[in-house]
Length: 76
Image (cartoon, helix red, strand yellow):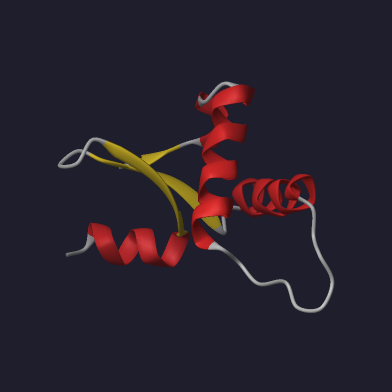
């Protein structure tokens, strides 16, 4: 189930984005990118609809997925 990011409080949304960013261990190349900059990038992706918040009823967990991955998961 896709949850609109606007339904989360700012603190909850920030916590979810930070957890996702630190879990993924993304490599940004030669230059170091701050956590705040990474959060801003994810926020823009959410606003564009490229990334969505997905709630999994089976595991009662929330995650961020690309819209394409979320749609493929929903079709399974």
